[in-house]
Image (cartoon, helix red, strand yellow):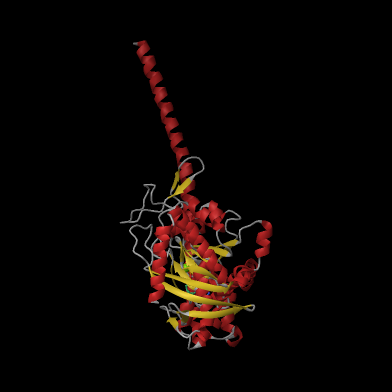
Length: 502
Ligand SMILES: Nc1ncnc2c1ncn2[C@@H]1O[C@H](COP(=O)(O)OP(=O)(O)OP(=O)(O)O)[C@@H](O)[C@H]1O
Ligand SMILES: [Mg+2]
C-alpha cells in the first residue's frame, strides 16, 4: 500500500509539473476512460438525501434489502422503533449483499460517512451521510436501470403494505421541516376499527366499501377521464357517532397510511402545500373538525372574489389578522382540489365536522367532496353490530321481547353508538342484564327527548302568540294616536275661531 501511495504521489507531482491546468483536465478524462475500458463494472450511488429532498429510492432499497438481508448477510443492523410491533433488518455500515434479478447479479453496499460541518445551510442536515452503492456488470446496465430499480420500488411498496405497520402521521411542528426534510412525525397506526365492527346501516356501509374499492382499482378510469386520482369524503354527524372510527376502518380496509393534519398548527397556505407535497401515495389525509380548525364565518373580502378566512387568534400565538400567519379557505380548497393536490396518486381526503351547517357552501359544492356521509344516531341495525362487538352474540341469541321493545324505542332515544357502547361495556359479562339496562337507558332518553320536544313545541307556540300580539299592538297604538291627533286638530280649529273673533 505504501509503495502504491508513493507511486501515486509521484505521478501526481509529475502531472502537476509537466501538464498545465488546461491539459490536466483532458488527461484525467482520458485516464478515466482508459480505466473504465478495462473494468467490467458500473457503479450507482443512491444517497439518502438528494439535494434538499429525501430520496424515495433510498428508502425503497433499504426496505427491499431488509427482506433479503435477513437470510444472506453476515452482519445486520437490527431496529425496533418505539411502539412498533416488528424488528426491521438493515445492512450495516460498509457491508455488502449480493442480489440477483432475472439472472443478473448485483452487489449492494451500504456506506455511512460523517457529514462535513457546513457553515451555512437552508436547513440543518443530518450528521451522517448515508447511501447505497449498487455495482452491476456493464452489460446488465439496461436491465438494472430499466426494470430492476422499478421492481425494487414496487416490492418496497408491497412490503410496506404487508409487513410494516401502517403509519399515522401528524404535523406537530406546523409545516416546518426536520433535519431529514420531513414535516411529518409518525407512529405505527394500530387502530382496531374495521368496517365489520363499525355500527351503521349495512346498506350505507356496503355502498362506502364499494366506493373505496372502486377508487383503488380505478387508475385507468382516472387516467382516461383526465381526473386526478383522489377522492374526498365529508363525514358529518353528532359527536360519538363514529366519524374517527370510520376513518380508521377505511385505512385498515385499504391498507393506507393516515396523515392527520392539525390545521391550527399550520400558519400559511404555503406550509399547507409543503405538507401535501410530503405525503405519500396510498394514504388518507384527514382534517378533523374542520369547522373548529378554520373560522368559516369570519369573512374578509380582499378584492373581488377573493375571500380570506382567518384562523381565530389564539391567546399567546402569533396568528391573527396581520396577514402574515393565516391560512385561507382558498388555500384549503387548493390543498384538496388545486394543481398541487395531484402531486401524488391514490389519495383520499377526509374532512369531519359536527356542524355541517357551519361549513361554507364552497366546501360542500358538488365535486369538491365526492361523498357526504351522515353518521347518525344509533339505529336498530347498527345496534345489532354493537351487540356482536361487545356481547359477542347475534341478536337471535337475545331475549326477543326485549329486542322488540328496543326496536320500538331506539329511534326516539337518539343515542349515539358511543353512548350505547358505554352501557354495553359496563355489562358485557352479563348479556341479559346489558340488554335490559340498555332498554332502560333508551326509554329514559326517549322520554326526555319527548318532553323536550313538547317543551320546544309549547315554546314555539308561545313565541308565535307573542309575535302575533306584537303585530297587532302597533295597530291599536296607531288608532289611539289618530284619535288624539284628530282631537288636537279640533281643539286647534276652536282656538283659531276664538282668536279670529277676538
Ligand atoms: N358507529 C360506530 N361503530 C362502532 N363504534 C362506535 C361508533 N361510533 C362510536 N363508536 C365508539 O365510540 C367511540 C367514539 O367514537 P368516534 O371517536 O369514532 O366518534 P366521533 O364521531 O369521531 O366523535 P367526535 O365528533 O367527538 O370526534 C369509539 O371509540 C367507538 O368505540
Ligand atoms: Mg372524532
